[in-house]
Image (cartoon, chains in turn orange, cyan):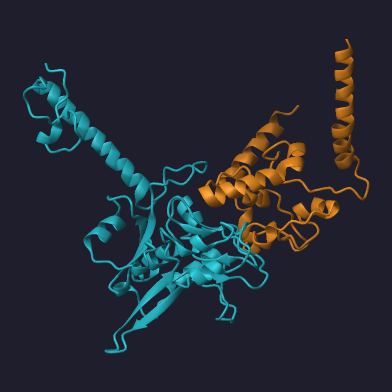
Length: 157
Length: 273
């Protein structure tokens, strides 16, 4: 009996600390709350809330796996993040991390956490950096994502 | 039928134990069964040979390794460069490397990036000259790896020598240690790097043997450019695979490795120098 009360109290506390801030931070949107733009496709490579907490860890792990072991899986690759979370500027081209509207900067500026990824890494997809607009071409992965999105929309009541 | 396996020294296959070609006699195999075993052995060899070819050389050197698999430590990637076919004023390899990896001359030859450069060598006695590309030689015992204080300069399991720029502190000790002057240091902030070739101020860099292309099953950009538009002087492949073209040529022709007296065991071989 005591244990069940304690458990439900713990669950309520957890909801208060974890669930409610996440809901209020990105739904109610007072002006000073960061509102990162959506990526392409229907969903991120992992749960959005989990990604907010853990993206730095998976990126750090992936970077060592890629550099030292040549593992180039797409799921947690920085290149994949950049290609999906592309934000276009006023000129229709993707913005670099120099712009405050860049996907990463929307939260990092707010949290005052400095990123040094983009001192070396490209902060926007390659083809668009050259201005050729090739990034808009359908890659197989993107075509799959679009087809899946169309299917999911079609089966929704 | 004797229960003891026969030593196969008689047929010369060197396998030991019994083999399908064991001398007739004590092994008690009858002829049809022996013929079947011969066939099985031949099939295994064929399959094995095809597999080796697929993994080691050809249009897709790294084919067969999935994106989630680690590099194969049995592979040793290397280059064979024929200076006799390397054109004197030709810089196709350098241009291809610049385009592929996003480095360029900025008008400061003392400090500009040099992943690959063309050298013209002249014999002062008779005036004979030849030309060759010089880049990281991807040594098996690389001095740059030895001296790096942070472990940023390292050799990948398949023999490619790289800089892990996440741990490079820019001390440039490796640049001093390299006998080939293959490394350069980035002095200025950069923007719009190639996504597959991150490079930034304060780190050392050098030829990566186009590691992103090799992992993708393709050949380095310089080799591709030389084969497509220039003298077909460069060959890329697995030095450890005896059936690969590069290993055959290294075995059959007289090749030179630059400053091999230093004992660094470079992975880049030259001909006609």
